Every structure is written in C-alpha cells, then in structure tokens.
Length: 328
Ligand code: AVJ
Image 1 (cartoon, protein in one colour):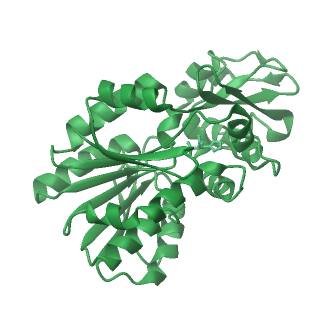
Image 2 (image 1 turned 180 degrees about the vertical axis):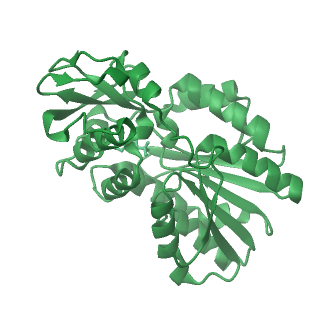
Image 3 (image 1 turned 135 degrees about the vertical axis):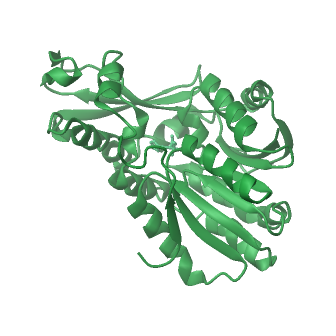
C-alpha cells in the first residue's frame, strides 16, 4: 500500500463478517439474498466496469452534473472541513469535486468509506499521483453504519463541518421507506444542523433505457450479479453455488419504479443444513437487488419523510439524473 492512510472503523473489526450464515438462511426463506453480497473486491471491480458501459447512463449523467457544477459544489464545501463519501467505489466522479476543491485552495480532508480494503487502496492510489496540496485523502474501511460513530468521535475530538457524499444513486438499493429512515437516523446521529449531505438520485426514466442499464449487451451486469454467489460460498465455507448453474434475470417495473435483479438456478441446487437444507428448485427467482428510481414527487416525499430540507438541486441536461444538497 502506497498513498493514503486507511482506517478500519468496523465495529467488530473483522471478527464477524458483515453477512452471516443466519442472514443467508433467513433471506433464502423469502427467495432473496442480501444485496451486500455483491460488494466483495471482485464485485466492486465489476461494478466499476459497469460504470464504463454506455448503457449504464447513471455514471455519465452524474459526472456531467459534477463537472458542470464543480465550482458551485466546491464553493459550498468550507475551507477546513471534512468530506466523507459513503460507498466511494471508483473515484473518477469524486475526483471532479476534489480537483475543484484543490483549484479553490480549500483545505479539505476527504475520507472514502468502503467495504474492501484492497479496493479502497487501489482507488485512492489512483488519486495520489494528482499530488493535491490542499485536499488530504484517507480511507475508511467499514459499512455505512460504522461511519456514524466515527463521525461522532471525529466531531467530539475537534468540531468540524461535515459534508457527506452519497453518489451513484446508491440510495436506490434501499426501499423508499428504508431510504428515508436511513437518511433520518444517519443525519440525526451523525450530522449537526450546519452540516450537509449531497445525494445523487436516478430517475424513473424511459423504461426501456432503465432496463438496458441493467441488462447491458456486454453482460457485465449478469457477471456482477452472479458474482454475489461467490461471496455466499465464502460465507458458507463451501462451494454451494456454482455461478454456471444460474442465470441472471433483470426486470424493470415501471409502475413501482424499480429494477429488480434475480439469480435463477437452471438445475435444482441442494442446500446445506446450515441454511435450511432441501433443494433450491430450478427456475426459482431469487432477488438479490432492487434499484429504486425516483420522480420529483418521490424525491420530495423522501426528503419530507426523512425530515430534511433541500438547499439546492442540479439536473443533468437530459434530466435523467439529479444531485440534491440537503441538510437537517
Ligand atoms: C451501485 C447501487 C447504484 O443499483 O444502479 C449496477 C448497482 N446493479 N448494475 C445500481 C448496480 C446493477 C448500482 N448501485
């Protein structure tokens, strides 16, 4: 590891895996698997590959907004403050903001939070050649919820203005209720009234375009979703699932405004006793991800329910995607 320092902020620092065998068993009884299975080191890399596929319009739409508004965004992030990115992943979108902060000569400490140390190290080291003088880079290894206590203790050590970044429409992986609840409890416990939260949100766009974003012609989405089974095997400590025995199935439900990703076994899969035993029947649609899309009403309901006020919002040119600056 070369550049930036990475701090392990996991509550149970590596003693307990973030997903347990019991979690797998529980979710399988509902023909589901935890979405977090998708984000091992390999999964983070596959997701990064997806962001370069033109059909996955979300990333380019967000980068368009960040580039257009970079000065305005930098203006709103105070000198001497702290910037924390939830689920940073690839930093090519974030670097637009960091470059603007550097150009504005703002001394800002940026912390990238993610679940894979190797991926944090790789992404941060791609930024270090930039040799920022004002922007300082660090990594935080942990889950979203781990960052709450970390932010609290940072503030109690030394009061600092905190800006949170939650980009990429990662909010979409929560149900609408969960998203509001998460924002509400996160801001209630980690943020002060003067702090701020930047949230990137994908919209209820043309159903065909949304469908294609999750069913790309290079089949990278399929690879990304199927890779979740590898992490399940690691948690179970045995090769229960062979990715070759599964199909990926994507469905966009325009009425409710979410895309659903399913793993579908092509043959019956015997399950070990640890997750209930029996057979997973061929053709069973196992949901591993929902990607919720928001229209303008969905967004105002989200912010209302979360008890947040909006300072500003920015849309990309084709209005497929928006970035919202909110505070509590
Ligand atoms: C990283 C949650 C924003 O839901 O669009 C990409 C993950 N899944 N292709 C999304 C994902 C399938 C992505 N997020």
